[in-house]
Image (cartoon, rainbow, N blue to C red):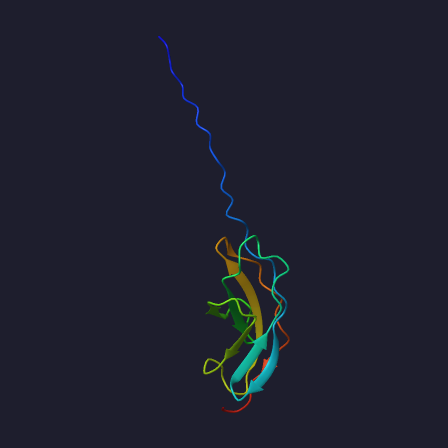
Length: 119
């Protein structure tokens, strides 16, 4: 019995890696319950352009396991929270960049940022 075997070449396709860790977000403006944040982009984009950022925010008196996340679907390194935050409340923020390979590591949390009364 003769067995015929065909060998196929399998080509590896690299999808790249998720981006690196962005800088810690800082408040550039606090007006009422609106907070404008800015951060630095990661040193590495993982081989693909950064599509956007996820922003996590927590109230320091709660555990960092209890947080809300805002998805920013643009590669900008700033974002303004308006109408999502409570008056006279302190928040801490962290950001993570993402590309088509996935989400990278989260930044460290910011120092507490306190909102004011109303808008």
